[in-house]
Every structure is written in structure tokens, then in C-alpha cells.
Image (cartoon, rainbow, N blue to C red; front, top):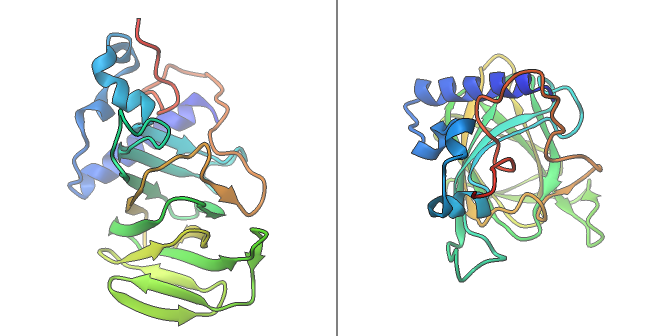
Length: 228
């Protein structure tokens, strides 16, 4: 991705959060220059990958395949004594015509909540023991206290305020229902580890390779400088 694309995506998500009165923690507003002055008192942000996360999944077409995210709180399963939190919280921004591809998590379970905007469609499949997609078996779905069964590949529609529970090894993808508008999502989960806990149905990237065509507006969660 070009840095200019990332900057544009960051500003669009900031605007979406303001529109829906979703206030962000102070570290989301740190400039790259401010990060150069931050000491070890902010190690939790660095070590637990808090903050901004923009991805095009290595496909180079963010407007069609991509996601904007903010990790607000998180633990670190590799450093449990220092960071004992067993939970994480994210905000996710999905624009109309964007797609987040099919994947599951080995470790974390999560609830995805529609916090405002349009309707999100989440397609669900079970997985086989060899981790491939099960295109045949019915899927048990948990949404806002309701448990029911749907055919493999069904899309679950979440309108604002609705949520779905995603269990371990449940394949899921994200799109926006056409004509309903961009969507702000919440995620509440066990500890998040994007380096080791995403199993995509097809080999795909997670963090973008960045072409520096303009100065960074904000640093992404994998870009923080070491403490001087």
C-alpha cells in the first residue's frame, strides 16, 4: 500500500468514529514525532500491538479487499506475567465494496458487534480436521443470546447493535450489505495475536508492504520506534 492510502484510511476511520460518538484512547492520536519521545511507560502499547492497523492483505487493492482496525486493549500470551490480560477489544471499519477474506483463529474466540452504520454480512463455515473449509456441514450460530443452525456458507446479517459469537476454527469473512453504508464494528475477544493466530483459507498477507509516497499521519501498530 502507498502511505497516502494508509493515511486516507486512518482519517476515514477517525471520521467514522466521530460520527458514531466512539471516542478513542489518547495513544491513537500520537503523531510519529511524538512516538519518538515516548519511553518505557508505553511498553504495553508496543508489546501488545495496540493502536492502528490497516491491511490490504497483500493484494494491492485496499478499496476491494481490506480492513481498517484499532486495537484498544490486549494482553500478550507470550508475556503473561507482564501483561496478564486475557482479553482484547478492537474497532473495525469496513467500507461498502470492501471484503475481508475467509479465515479462522486457532486460539481466540470473539464477538463481532455492529456499532453503527450499515449492515455487515458475515459468512460462516465449519472447518475440517485438516483445517480446510467444510462446505457441507451445517453451522451452529450464536447471536445475541440466540443459538440456531444455518447451512454452510450462510451469511449472517448484523444490523447496528447486533452481534455474533465466532468460536475457534470457525471460518468467517466480512462484507457490507450493498446500499446500507460503511460499517463500524466492535470486537471483544480473547488475546489477539495477528502474527500467529490467523488461518486464512487461501495464502494471503496480513500486514502491508508500504510505499512511502508521503509522511505518515499515524504509525501503525507494527511501526513503533524502540525507546531511545
